[in-house]
Length: 364
Image 1 (tube, rainbow, N blue to C red):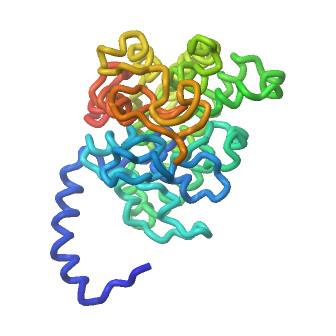
Image 2 (image 1 turned 180 degrees about the vertical axis):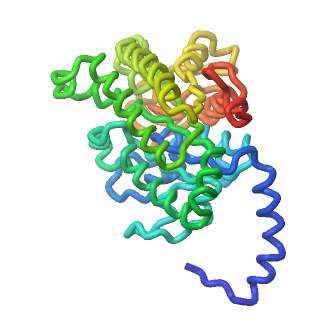
Protein backbone atom coordinates (compact mmCIF):
# COMPACT_ATOMS: atom_id res chain seq x y z
CA UNK A 1 0.00 0.00 0.00
CA UNK A 2 1.35 3.43 -0.92
CA UNK A 3 1.61 5.82 2.04
CA UNK A 4 0.80 9.48 1.42
CA UNK A 5 2.91 12.29 2.81
CA UNK A 6 1.25 14.26 5.65
CA UNK A 7 1.54 17.55 3.73
CA UNK A 8 -0.86 16.22 1.10
CA UNK A 9 -3.77 16.11 3.56
CA UNK A 10 -4.67 19.79 3.41
CA UNK A 11 -4.63 19.69 -0.38
CA UNK A 12 -6.77 16.57 -0.37
CA UNK A 13 -9.29 18.10 2.01
CA UNK A 14 -9.56 21.46 0.25
CA UNK A 15 -9.72 19.96 -3.23
CA UNK A 16 -11.75 16.80 -2.78
CA UNK A 17 -14.13 17.66 0.03
CA UNK A 18 -16.27 19.96 -2.17
CA UNK A 19 -16.38 17.22 -4.79
CA UNK A 20 -17.51 14.63 -2.26
CA UNK A 21 -20.10 17.08 -0.98
CA UNK A 22 -21.48 17.69 -4.46
CA UNK A 23 -21.61 13.96 -5.28
CA UNK A 24 -23.47 13.11 -2.09
CA UNK A 25 -26.00 15.86 -2.67
CA UNK A 26 -26.60 15.20 -6.35
CA UNK A 27 -27.36 11.49 -6.00
CA UNK A 28 -30.98 10.37 -5.95
CA UNK A 29 -30.34 7.80 -3.20
CA UNK A 30 -27.68 7.63 -0.48
CA UNK A 31 -26.42 4.17 -1.48
CA UNK A 32 -26.94 0.99 -3.49
CA UNK A 33 -26.19 -2.38 -1.89
CA UNK A 34 -26.00 -5.15 -4.48
CA UNK A 35 -26.58 -8.87 -3.90
CA UNK A 36 -26.57 -11.55 -6.54
CA UNK A 37 -24.65 -13.59 -9.07
CA UNK A 38 -22.49 -13.04 -12.15
CA UNK A 39 -25.08 -10.82 -13.81
CA UNK A 40 -24.16 -8.05 -11.36
CA UNK A 41 -20.75 -9.18 -10.06
CA UNK A 42 -18.29 -6.30 -10.43
CA UNK A 43 -15.21 -8.17 -9.25
CA UNK A 44 -15.81 -10.08 -6.01
CA UNK A 45 -14.77 -13.36 -7.60
CA UNK A 46 -11.38 -11.90 -8.46
CA UNK A 47 -10.61 -12.38 -4.78
CA UNK A 48 -11.71 -16.04 -4.56
CA UNK A 49 -8.68 -18.25 -5.19
CA UNK A 50 -10.59 -21.45 -5.87
CA UNK A 51 -13.47 -20.07 -7.93
CA UNK A 52 -13.94 -21.38 -11.46
CA UNK A 53 -16.33 -18.52 -12.18
CA UNK A 54 -13.98 -15.69 -13.05
CA UNK A 55 -13.85 -13.03 -15.73
CA UNK A 56 -10.68 -11.11 -14.82
CA UNK A 57 -8.96 -11.97 -18.10
CA UNK A 58 -9.35 -11.01 -21.79
CA UNK A 59 -11.55 -10.64 -23.74
CA UNK A 60 -13.85 -9.54 -20.93
CA UNK A 61 -13.81 -5.78 -20.43
CA UNK A 62 -13.08 -5.09 -24.08
CA UNK A 63 -15.55 -2.18 -24.10
CA UNK A 64 -15.14 -1.12 -20.48
CA UNK A 65 -13.82 2.47 -20.16
CA UNK A 66 -10.38 1.13 -19.17
CA UNK A 67 -10.47 -1.47 -21.99
CA UNK A 68 -9.32 -4.00 -19.40
CA UNK A 69 -10.99 -7.00 -17.72
CA UNK A 70 -12.46 -6.12 -14.34
CA UNK A 71 -14.14 -9.30 -13.19
CA UNK A 72 -17.44 -8.38 -14.83
CA UNK A 73 -18.86 -11.16 -16.99
CA UNK A 74 -19.33 -8.75 -19.85
CA UNK A 75 -17.58 -6.98 -22.68
CA UNK A 76 -18.12 -3.78 -20.68
CA UNK A 77 -20.46 -2.59 -17.98
CA UNK A 78 -23.34 -4.50 -16.43
CA UNK A 79 -26.74 -3.38 -15.17
CA UNK A 80 -25.37 -2.58 -11.69
CA UNK A 81 -23.02 -0.02 -13.25
CA UNK A 82 -25.78 1.62 -15.26
CA UNK A 83 -28.22 1.82 -12.34
CA UNK A 84 -25.53 3.52 -10.25
CA UNK A 85 -24.97 6.02 -13.05
CA UNK A 86 -28.67 6.76 -13.25
CA UNK A 87 -28.93 7.61 -9.56
CA UNK A 88 -25.70 9.64 -9.57
CA UNK A 89 -23.52 7.26 -7.55
CA UNK A 90 -20.25 5.48 -8.30
CA UNK A 91 -20.60 1.76 -8.98
CA UNK A 92 -20.81 -0.09 -5.67
CA UNK A 93 -17.35 -1.66 -5.35
CA UNK A 94 -16.86 -5.38 -4.61
CA UNK A 95 -16.88 -6.03 -0.87
CA UNK A 96 -13.90 -8.37 -1.10
CA UNK A 97 -11.79 -5.53 -2.51
CA UNK A 98 -12.37 -3.64 0.75
CA UNK A 99 -11.12 -6.37 3.07
CA UNK A 100 -7.81 -8.15 3.53
CA UNK A 101 -7.33 -11.82 2.72
CA UNK A 102 -8.09 -12.43 6.39
CA UNK A 103 -11.42 -10.58 5.95
CA UNK A 104 -10.27 -7.61 7.99
CA UNK A 105 -11.84 -4.37 6.75
CA UNK A 106 -9.24 -2.09 5.18
CA UNK A 107 -11.49 0.53 3.58
CA UNK A 108 -14.86 1.68 4.95
CA UNK A 109 -15.19 4.76 2.72
CA UNK A 110 -17.63 3.15 0.22
CA UNK A 111 -19.90 1.76 2.93
CA UNK A 112 -22.05 4.90 2.86
CA UNK A 113 -22.53 4.99 -0.92
CA UNK A 114 -22.92 1.26 -1.44
CA UNK A 115 -21.11 -2.03 -1.69
CA UNK A 116 -21.55 -5.02 -4.00
CA UNK A 117 -21.61 -8.51 -2.55
CA UNK A 118 -22.59 -10.21 -5.82
CA UNK A 119 -20.55 -13.22 -6.81
CA UNK A 120 -20.37 -15.20 -10.05
CA UNK A 121 -21.83 -18.67 -9.57
CA UNK A 122 -23.72 -17.69 -6.42
CA UNK A 123 -27.14 -19.06 -5.62
CA UNK A 124 -29.99 -18.72 -3.18
CA UNK A 125 -28.95 -22.11 -1.85
CA UNK A 126 -25.50 -22.62 -0.36
CA UNK A 127 -25.19 -25.91 -2.23
CA UNK A 128 -25.36 -24.11 -5.58
CA UNK A 129 -21.81 -22.87 -4.92
CA UNK A 130 -20.58 -26.36 -5.79
CA UNK A 131 -21.25 -25.60 -9.46
CA UNK A 132 -18.14 -23.43 -9.70
CA UNK A 133 -16.18 -24.70 -6.70
CA UNK A 134 -16.19 -21.37 -4.84
CA UNK A 135 -18.67 -18.49 -4.83
CA UNK A 136 -20.22 -16.24 -2.20
CA UNK A 137 -23.70 -17.64 -1.66
CA UNK A 138 -26.58 -15.33 -0.77
CA UNK A 139 -26.43 -16.30 2.92
CA UNK A 140 -22.76 -15.36 3.10
CA UNK A 141 -23.39 -12.14 1.18
CA UNK A 142 -25.82 -11.14 3.92
CA UNK A 143 -23.20 -11.99 6.57
CA UNK A 144 -20.76 -9.68 4.77
CA UNK A 145 -23.41 -6.97 4.58
CA UNK A 146 -24.05 -7.30 8.33
CA UNK A 147 -20.46 -6.13 8.84
CA UNK A 148 -21.18 -3.05 6.73
CA UNK A 149 -24.38 -2.47 8.69
CA UNK A 150 -22.60 -2.62 12.05
CA UNK A 151 -20.00 -0.18 10.78
CA UNK A 152 -22.72 2.25 9.65
CA UNK A 153 -24.46 2.03 13.03
CA UNK A 154 -21.14 2.70 14.73
CA UNK A 155 -20.52 5.76 12.58
CA UNK A 156 -24.03 7.19 12.16
CA UNK A 157 -25.78 5.85 15.25
CA UNK A 158 -28.81 3.55 15.13
CA UNK A 159 -31.30 6.20 14.01
CA UNK A 160 -28.86 7.74 11.53
CA UNK A 161 -28.09 4.36 9.97
CA UNK A 162 -31.80 3.51 9.83
CA UNK A 163 -32.57 6.77 8.02
CA UNK A 164 -29.68 6.27 5.61
CA UNK A 165 -30.61 2.69 4.76
CA UNK A 166 -34.34 3.36 4.48
CA UNK A 167 -33.64 5.59 1.48
CA UNK A 168 -31.01 3.31 -0.07
CA UNK A 169 -31.63 0.67 -2.74
CA UNK A 170 -31.08 -3.03 -2.09
CA UNK A 171 -30.66 -4.76 -5.43
CA UNK A 172 -31.07 -8.54 -5.58
CA UNK A 173 -30.37 -10.49 -8.78
CA UNK A 174 -30.04 -14.20 -8.07
CA UNK A 175 -31.58 -17.60 -8.84
CA UNK A 176 -30.37 -18.60 -12.30
CA UNK A 177 -27.57 -20.76 -10.93
CA UNK A 178 -29.98 -22.58 -8.64
CA UNK A 179 -32.03 -23.56 -11.68
CA UNK A 180 -28.92 -24.69 -13.55
CA UNK A 181 -27.94 -26.66 -10.45
CA UNK A 182 -31.30 -28.42 -10.34
CA UNK A 183 -31.08 -29.14 -14.06
CA UNK A 184 -27.66 -30.77 -13.65
CA UNK A 185 -28.28 -32.72 -10.44
CA UNK A 186 -30.12 -36.04 -10.51
CA UNK A 187 -29.98 -36.04 -6.71
CA UNK A 188 -31.93 -32.80 -6.49
CA UNK A 189 -34.45 -33.94 -9.09
CA UNK A 190 -34.98 -37.18 -7.17
CA UNK A 191 -35.46 -35.25 -3.93
CA UNK A 192 -37.73 -32.46 -5.23
CA UNK A 193 -40.26 -32.06 -7.99
CA UNK A 194 -39.65 -28.93 -10.09
CA UNK A 195 -42.50 -27.12 -8.34
CA UNK A 196 -41.21 -28.08 -4.88
CA UNK A 197 -37.71 -26.89 -5.72
CA UNK A 198 -38.86 -23.59 -7.23
CA UNK A 199 -41.16 -22.91 -4.27
CA UNK A 200 -38.25 -23.65 -1.93
CA UNK A 201 -36.12 -21.15 -3.84
CA UNK A 202 -38.75 -18.45 -3.33
CA UNK A 203 -39.33 -19.22 0.35
CA UNK A 204 -35.58 -19.32 1.07
CA UNK A 205 -35.10 -15.96 -0.63
CA UNK A 206 -38.00 -14.62 1.41
CA UNK A 207 -36.20 -15.46 4.65
CA UNK A 208 -33.04 -13.85 3.26
CA UNK A 209 -34.88 -10.64 2.36
CA UNK A 210 -36.31 -10.60 5.89
CA UNK A 211 -32.79 -10.82 7.28
CA UNK A 212 -31.83 -7.82 5.17
CA UNK A 213 -34.91 -6.03 6.52
CA UNK A 214 -33.55 -6.64 10.00
CA UNK A 215 -30.40 -4.86 8.85
CA UNK A 216 -32.26 -1.78 7.62
CA UNK A 217 -33.32 -2.68 4.06
CA UNK A 218 -36.59 -1.06 3.04
CA UNK A 219 -36.44 -0.53 -0.74
CA UNK A 220 -35.78 -3.67 -2.77
CA UNK A 221 -35.02 -3.88 -6.48
CA UNK A 222 -35.48 -7.56 -7.35
CA UNK A 223 -34.74 -9.13 -10.70
CA UNK A 224 -36.56 -12.21 -11.88
CA UNK A 225 -34.82 -14.99 -13.78
CA UNK A 226 -34.38 -14.44 -17.48
CA UNK A 227 -34.77 -16.70 -20.49
CA UNK A 228 -32.05 -19.05 -19.24
CA UNK A 229 -33.04 -21.79 -21.67
CA UNK A 230 -32.14 -19.51 -24.57
CA UNK A 231 -28.54 -18.88 -23.48
CA UNK A 232 -26.00 -20.18 -26.03
CA UNK A 233 -24.90 -22.78 -23.47
CA UNK A 234 -28.37 -24.34 -23.68
CA UNK A 235 -29.13 -23.69 -27.35
CA UNK A 236 -26.01 -25.57 -28.42
CA UNK A 237 -27.51 -28.77 -27.00
CA UNK A 238 -30.15 -28.67 -29.71
CA UNK A 239 -29.27 -29.67 -33.27
CA UNK A 240 -31.28 -26.71 -34.54
CA UNK A 241 -30.13 -24.23 -31.87
CA UNK A 242 -33.53 -24.03 -30.20
CA UNK A 243 -34.12 -22.89 -26.63
CA UNK A 244 -34.45 -25.38 -23.79
CA UNK A 245 -38.11 -24.80 -23.00
CA UNK A 246 -38.02 -26.91 -19.85
CA UNK A 247 -35.50 -24.53 -18.32
CA UNK A 248 -37.52 -21.55 -19.50
CA UNK A 249 -40.67 -23.00 -17.95
CA UNK A 250 -38.88 -23.45 -14.64
CA UNK A 251 -37.70 -19.84 -14.77
CA UNK A 252 -41.21 -18.62 -15.53
CA UNK A 253 -42.72 -20.72 -12.73
CA UNK A 254 -40.14 -19.43 -10.27
CA UNK A 255 -40.80 -15.84 -11.31
CA UNK A 256 -44.48 -16.28 -10.51
CA UNK A 257 -43.58 -17.65 -7.07
CA UNK A 258 -41.14 -14.77 -6.58
CA UNK A 259 -43.77 -12.11 -7.38
CA UNK A 260 -46.25 -13.72 -5.00
CA UNK A 261 -43.59 -13.87 -2.30
CA UNK A 262 -42.76 -10.18 -2.71
CA UNK A 263 -46.43 -9.28 -2.39
CA UNK A 264 -46.67 -11.35 0.82
CA UNK A 265 -43.53 -9.71 2.15
CA UNK A 266 -44.97 -6.25 1.65
CA UNK A 267 -48.17 -7.22 3.46
CA UNK A 268 -46.18 -8.60 6.38
CA UNK A 269 -43.54 -5.87 6.55
CA UNK A 270 -45.51 -2.66 6.11
CA UNK A 271 -42.46 -0.44 5.66
CA UNK A 272 -41.08 -2.43 2.71
CA UNK A 273 -41.45 -1.36 -0.94
CA UNK A 274 -40.15 -3.17 -3.98
CA UNK A 275 -39.65 -2.95 -7.72
CA UNK A 276 -39.71 -6.31 -9.49
CA UNK A 277 -37.99 -6.40 -12.86
CA UNK A 278 -39.44 -8.94 -15.31
CA UNK A 279 -36.27 -9.74 -17.23
CA UNK A 280 -37.96 -12.87 -18.61
CA UNK A 281 -40.45 -10.77 -20.56
CA UNK A 282 -37.74 -8.37 -21.71
CA UNK A 283 -35.60 -11.18 -23.07
CA UNK A 284 -38.64 -12.83 -24.65
CA UNK A 285 -39.24 -9.58 -26.51
CA UNK A 286 -35.60 -9.45 -27.59
CA UNK A 287 -35.84 -13.00 -28.95
CA UNK A 288 -39.21 -12.51 -30.67
CA UNK A 289 -38.36 -9.27 -32.47
CA UNK A 290 -34.60 -8.72 -32.16
CA UNK A 291 -34.43 -6.07 -34.88
CA UNK A 292 -36.78 -3.84 -32.85
CA UNK A 293 -34.03 -3.61 -30.23
CA UNK A 294 -31.05 -3.42 -32.57
CA UNK A 295 -30.00 -7.06 -32.29
CA UNK A 296 -29.07 -9.16 -35.31
CA UNK A 297 -27.65 -12.15 -33.40
CA UNK A 298 -29.60 -13.68 -30.53
CA UNK A 299 -28.41 -17.30 -30.61
CA UNK A 300 -24.64 -17.24 -30.74
CA UNK A 301 -22.31 -15.79 -28.14
CA UNK A 302 -20.03 -12.97 -29.20
CA UNK A 303 -16.98 -14.42 -27.42
CA UNK A 304 -16.14 -18.12 -27.38
CA UNK A 305 -15.35 -21.03 -29.66
CA UNK A 306 -17.27 -23.85 -31.32
CA UNK A 307 -20.98 -24.34 -31.88
CA UNK A 308 -22.72 -20.99 -31.24
CA UNK A 309 -19.37 -20.02 -29.69
CA UNK A 310 -20.56 -21.91 -26.64
CA UNK A 311 -18.27 -24.97 -26.63
CA UNK A 312 -15.46 -22.92 -25.10
CA UNK A 313 -16.11 -19.95 -22.77
CA UNK A 314 -14.75 -16.45 -23.32
CA UNK A 315 -11.13 -17.31 -22.55
CA UNK A 316 -8.06 -15.56 -23.96
CA UNK A 317 -7.87 -18.27 -26.65
CA UNK A 318 -11.43 -17.51 -27.80
CA UNK A 319 -12.45 -15.26 -30.68
CA UNK A 320 -14.91 -12.39 -30.36
CA UNK A 321 -17.28 -10.55 -32.67
CA UNK A 322 -16.40 -7.12 -34.02
CA UNK A 323 -19.85 -5.58 -33.43
CA UNK A 324 -20.77 -6.35 -29.83
CA UNK A 325 -23.79 -4.04 -29.83
CA UNK A 326 -25.81 -6.26 -32.18
CA UNK A 327 -25.34 -9.42 -30.06
CA UNK A 328 -27.68 -10.33 -27.22
CA UNK A 329 -25.11 -12.60 -25.56
CA UNK A 330 -21.51 -11.80 -24.80
CA UNK A 331 -20.51 -15.33 -23.77
CA UNK A 332 -22.27 -18.64 -23.36
CA UNK A 333 -24.29 -17.40 -20.35
CA UNK A 334 -24.15 -13.61 -20.05
CA UNK A 335 -25.70 -10.69 -21.96
CA UNK A 336 -23.65 -8.02 -23.70
CA UNK A 337 -23.11 -4.54 -22.34
CA UNK A 338 -25.74 -3.36 -24.83
CA UNK A 339 -28.37 -5.68 -23.33
CA UNK A 340 -27.36 -4.70 -19.79
CA UNK A 341 -27.85 -1.04 -20.63
CA UNK A 342 -31.36 -1.77 -21.92
CA UNK A 343 -32.12 -3.74 -18.75
CA UNK A 344 -31.06 -0.78 -16.63
CA UNK A 345 -33.20 1.63 -18.66
CA UNK A 346 -36.26 -0.58 -18.13
CA UNK A 347 -35.48 -1.11 -14.45
CA UNK A 348 -35.26 2.62 -13.91
CA UNK A 349 -38.06 3.94 -16.12
CA UNK A 350 -40.18 0.86 -16.96
CA UNK A 351 -41.94 -0.89 -18.53
CA UNK A 352 -41.39 -4.49 -17.42
CA UNK A 353 -41.34 -3.42 -13.76
CA UNK A 354 -43.96 -4.16 -11.10
CA UNK A 355 -45.59 -2.49 -9.24
CA UNK A 356 -43.13 0.42 -9.50
CA UNK A 357 -40.11 1.27 -11.55
CA UNK A 358 -36.99 2.34 -9.68
CA UNK A 359 -37.58 6.03 -10.32
CA UNK A 360 -40.97 5.68 -8.60
CA UNK A 361 -39.48 3.54 -5.82
CA UNK A 362 -36.93 6.24 -5.07
CA UNK A 363 -39.65 8.88 -4.87
CA UNK A 364 -41.53 7.08 -2.07
